[in-house]
Image (cartoon, rainbow, N blue to C red; front, top):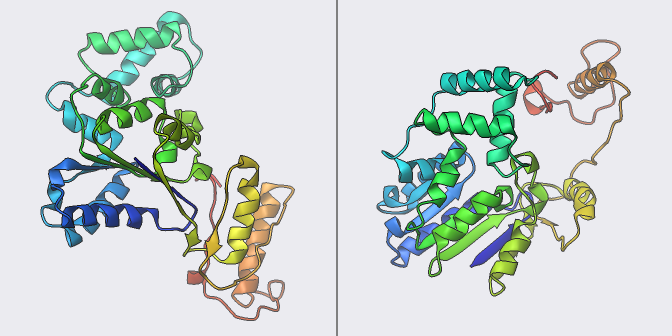
Length: 307
């Protein structure tokens, strides 16, 4: 068992792909290797990299937890259409007098199936009706795959390990088996899916279950300047544990924090900053910028589509 703990900008996906390629080069059969990612896009990116490096790369199992589970269960289950899920949810809401929309109810069902809280009578009834209809939903795939206790992979790799929930952790242990080689990689400080049951302490749990595991820490960041990493370390300092991030990039601009009293004033501030950086759009936007930027060099990140 190997646990790789990586900081931001240290090239996690590259590390995982490189390891798999080297295993095949050393004689490991591609069909014995599995790599679990958390997004379809990441899985496809890994496949492309492996195809460029490895013969018979298509024999390597690469996918999300749910896509791999669906492949193992193919022919045994029928995934419910969204229309059926909404219909059953509406029936349960009406019968139990619940005050929520069907989509919100299905969100609560999903949270329960991912290990968050207990099942209410309404949720239990929805699950019963779904089974009676001979169907399963997306979140059932993990539980159903856990019932197939005969499936193991000789070489199991898990990317973004900090995002696994309790059931996915159990599935990782089952797929690795007693004789399999397990390699996980992630960053506990980037565990942001607690609402889906994920917990950043999964690394500690893994090391408790496998005290002889090798721990490798990736500390060199190739993406961020010392100023950005300095802010990151301050932000995650309260998490506890060992923290070490070494910037490879040269020193850059200082990070500025602007606190605005309202959304409107925030928008005005951002607009004025852009005007200043491009050399001024009017007499009010001019400023003393050392280098005039183009619009193509500027990005604005917002938390929601509404913003």
